[in-house]
Amino acid sequence: MNTKTVAYVFGAVFTAVGILGFVPALTPNGNLLGLFHVGTLHNIIHLASGLVALGLASMGGAYAKKYLIGFGAVYGLVAVVGLVQGHTVLGLIDVNAADNILHIVLALALVGSGLVLPADDGIAAK
Image 1 (tube, rainbow, N blue to C red):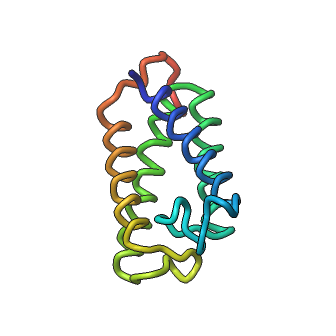
Image 2: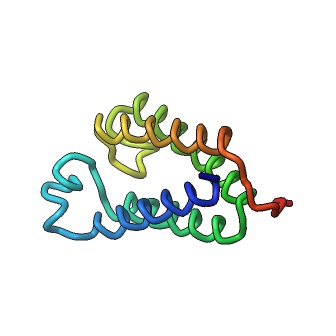
Image 3: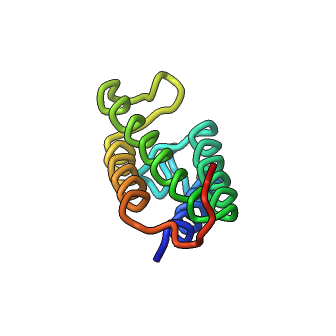
C-alpha cells in the first residue's frame, strides 16, 4: 500500500461523509448516524477534504503524501481546538466528544500514513 491508495480511500470516505451529512434520515438531531455532530459548513469541509484528497492522489503519490501529512495536521489542530473550546471549533462548526475523538484518530491515521507509507509512484512533488 502507498500514499496514493490511502489518499484515495480517505478522499472517498470524506466525500461520502460530506454527502451523507446532508441526508436528513441519517442526521437525526443534527448528528450523523446519531453520533457525530454535523451541519452545513461541517459537511462542506468534509466534502472539500475528500475532493482535495482525490485530486491530489490523482496527481501522484508525492502529492498524496503531502495531503495526508498536511490535512492530518489540520485535523489534529481541529481536535485540539474542539477539545479546548468544548462544543465548537472557532465558533464555525459545532462539535461533540465523538467528533473530537474522531478528529484525533483521523489526525493520527493521516499523518501516520503520510510519514510511514511510500509515495511509490516515482512522481516528485514540487
